[in-house]
Length: 286
Image (cartoon, rainbow, N blue to C red; front, side, top):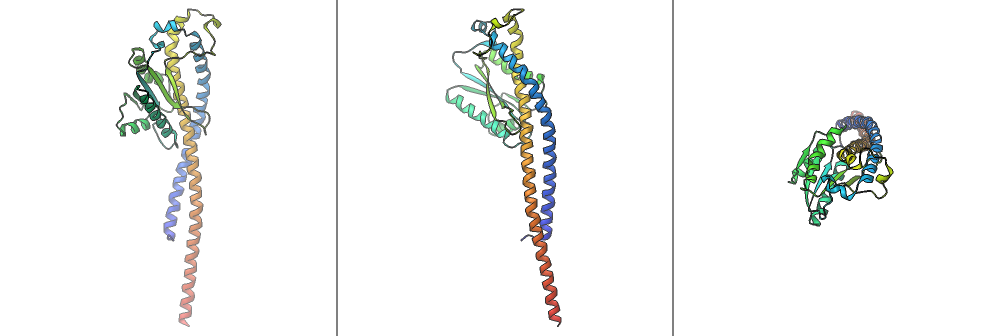
């Protein structure tokens, strides 16, 4: 059995760890509230924008706007992976990275070349360690992303699609359902698919014409899709971190309870031994 001083040191160490994890849990909870508000604010606009673009789309416009082109055969695809810059968030980053690896393997199995674009230190570190080439590496996206962040992230990839260098663009991020549910999601960002259930252009009174509106709105649509993904990713990260830190705090409490019982047994054993020594010494003097 460990000595009294050793158990005391372990208790102090676990208490310090629990204090850290508890603080991180509280910080994540605070950030999660603000991130959740941003998610709720961005979703209605994103859904309305998607409905408008899907309704205004027509095959004839793809000849006029490169961003609307639909290649007959996909030869090369770009994958944009959004991870976090920090860890201690449970399986958040690992799940996203696994989704990206599986998608790359599936595409290559179909004979499609892939190129990887990564935002987030955790994703970059993973693929860099394994020698996987990344065309874009971004670590400057904070947990409070902006529209400018989204535009700078997607602009070079969008240009590669419009020029025909890639035939498809996939976006991998977390879908924020709740603090406890943040599954990874793969979105077919480009080419843009028309939604059969969306309202047609006839449902709108257009001024100026639909194609002029598309010319202005298409870049905004792609940019907003990435922005929405970044906002949900930030909320999912904080939700996962809060869950992970709460679990760590609870586990530290269980360890402290066990160590406290161990400390009591050690103290009891020492007292019993001291009493036995006193009794033995007294008997020897008689």
